Amino acid sequence: MTDLIIRPLRPEDRPHWTALWRAYLEFYETTLPDAVYDSTFARLLGEDPQDFSALVAEADGGLVGLTHYLFHRHGWKIENVCYLQDLYAVPERRGQGVGRALIEGVYAAADAHGAPSVYWLTQDFNATARKLYDRVGVLTPFIKYQRP
Image (cartoon, rainbow, N blue to C red; front, side, top):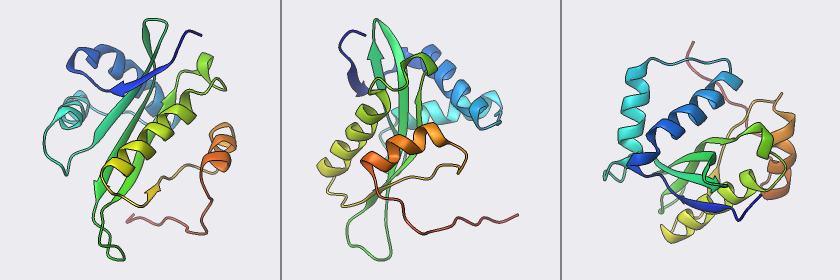
């Protein structure tokens, strides 16, 4: 693999971003209407500080990964915290540092924004990703519940 570049999402990335995010959602057995793709992409590029941000991993002339993250208030901290919502690397690039580089990119963004905490969720069956997460993060004892 040539040098990996982690950079912010750009408007011209839309077709490649769509393909990556669709593959990510398929992994989690989820489909979304086109309107959600449109809204999410617009928010990722928007200027509202409450909107999500995105980084992409570029290698060999194409996009090979993405991450979406959000800064938000926290009742136990004065500073905002950072939620890393989505992380995806194309299967043929897994184990080559794409996921780690994207997470480190989010860590750098959090540092630049003065956010002392970055957190994320994953499903317990996502063993491949959890091997990486065990190296770059700390597993917490929290269990997620949601409204039925």
